[in-house]
Length: 198
Image (tube, rainbow, N blue to C red):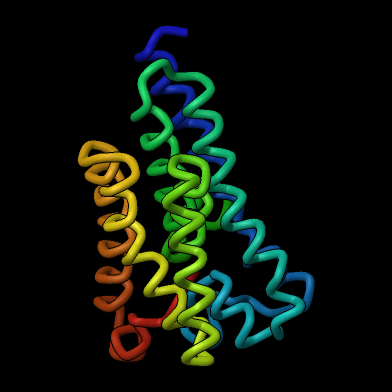
């Protein structure tokens, strides 16, 4: 497949994968619309708070899997390494603005995590280790997630070099933009804009 065709197909597949509203579907099975309760973010954290930790496990796995599958598709179809990143970006946009859920989605953190595990497995393994250690020390998954996510590019710079790290930075900008837009939607959202993964 030529590179332009690989880009188009990978991004389309990535967006459609990202658009699968895992949290909305899990909540619907329990007659809860996660977009209307808690911090109104249809992601893992709100699912855990509203439905319980066990019920939220499929959300955690599903949202991460969307990013991982998108990155795998892009990496398999494209000759250039950056095609996987474009597919991951499309999945993150799909998670944030899902066509299958009225374009009302989450903040793409776990979709990002799933993607970078595929795109940079060594750096991801180290970042996950940092996340777990921080979680154990602070008893806070939120802090563990922050340390893992924001420490990842520094680790990747050593492991993969500047170009892939810059591409990861671009993916992280999608998360930052999504958080910023969530904060502008109202006073309640602004107060909860710093909520952890979703």
